Image (cartoon, rainbow, N blue to C red):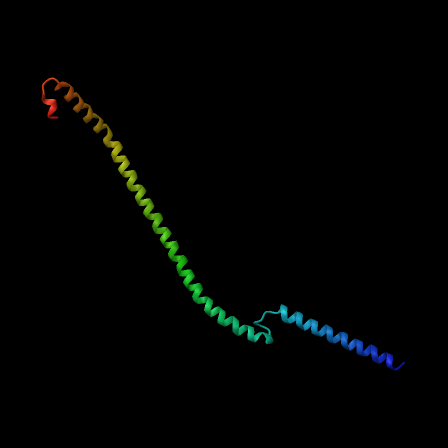
Length: 122
């Protein structure tokens, strides 16, 4: 009868040890590596990666801003070009009545001078 309580005590000890092991593994995996004592090696490798990434991030950020500025300049140039084209079109439309009138006058002169022999010089 004395061996039976000893076996149950051993089983309880093993079960308790197993639960402590599982709990510590769960805490280690779920805890952030910055606040956990065992995660100091991981923290050092993260620092190295962050320093390396900051250089890449900075270059990438500068490239993004450069592309955005180039896009803004391109849009501004497109607006200026559109304004110039619009202004030129307005000028052509305003000159059209004068051009039509001048063509009509020249055609009228050619008709009047048709029999006189001067149309060859025109």
